[in-house]
Amino acid sequence: MSKKIAVMADVARETGLSMATVSKVLNKDRHGTIDISMPTQELVIAASHRIGYRRNALTNWLTKKQTNVVGGILTNMGETSITQLIRHLESELEEKSLSLHLTSADKNRHEGDLVDGFIERIRHFREHRVDGLAIFVGTWHPESLQKVIDETIGVPTVLYGCDFSLRVSYVDIARREGVRDAVEHLYRRGYRPLVFIGGNVLGSASAKVAGFKDGVDKLGISENSQIFLVESWDIERQIYDIDKIVGTLKPGVGVIVDTDIRGALFAEACVRHKFKVGDDIGVLFIANDHFFMEHGVCPMSCMSIQFSEVAKGIANILTEQIAGRLKSPVEKIIKMELRPRRSTSGPLCFK
Image (cartoon, rainbow, N blue to C red; front, side):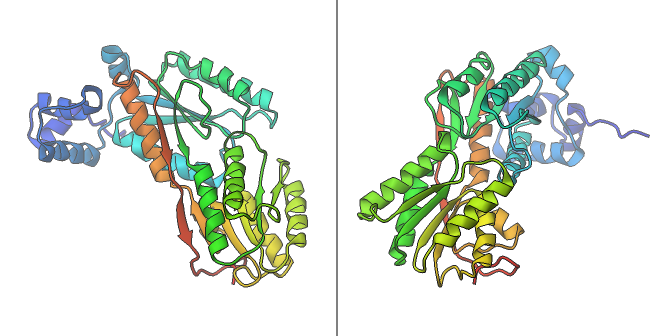
């Protein structure tokens, strides 16, 4: 026998409060400030979670022309960093009685096809009248990204992964500042020269390269510093390129490696070349450090992207837009956090 779906009346019965009070609390995200005490609000929210209450999408559509659905469009759904972000975002949106429906725009790795994929999925979500859109992008040309953003006009939208001026709200990471701090961190520990290993210099990646250049210029060590770009999407090619780079490194060098996957490949290359990180070379990853713990890799240090804060920023902006309280685009920049080297075990653990 199917389980009975909890409705607002069940929450009222559970709390002993009136339907009017319960309705105000459960629809607070639509009304803004309400004249209900915080203890009462907390009582209602706790009861709604306990009995499994979820706002009915059809009822919401008929009464408010809202579906309580946010459409999420992204690429690279299998990447650990994206998985972490999505997990946090789903939780933040659920707290606001919104559900996240995800789809991938991947067709292949050509940018033109990705643009078509994003546009196709935006139109699909618009047909299904989602309340908002969360769009996750990466290393795109501004012109390509603008074509995608043009399709979102009239729908509350938040962009993540690129800070181009596109007249749309976005949440992003302070990448340039983070890499600049990474340069200073390695420099203070006596590592010379410094090396940056990154990917395609477009969009968010360009900010990291700029941050590296800022840092070495400020310290007066730009002449001997190097930037290596591993631009291929093919994993075998990345393994080859990174192994070749590691083969050129000398003891005493400080290395900044951008992103989870390149970091893991770099770690494997260090093992093959018998480098002892921290003794022979200094390494700092620009990444989601949960990835390295899951894979048994212990970087010397990590400039960690705070995905919980990114998710909170996206959810808060979307909620304000959906409620009509934001009339113009806003931006929120999340700082990276320096995580010092920790002790762990595993086949790729740096000693």
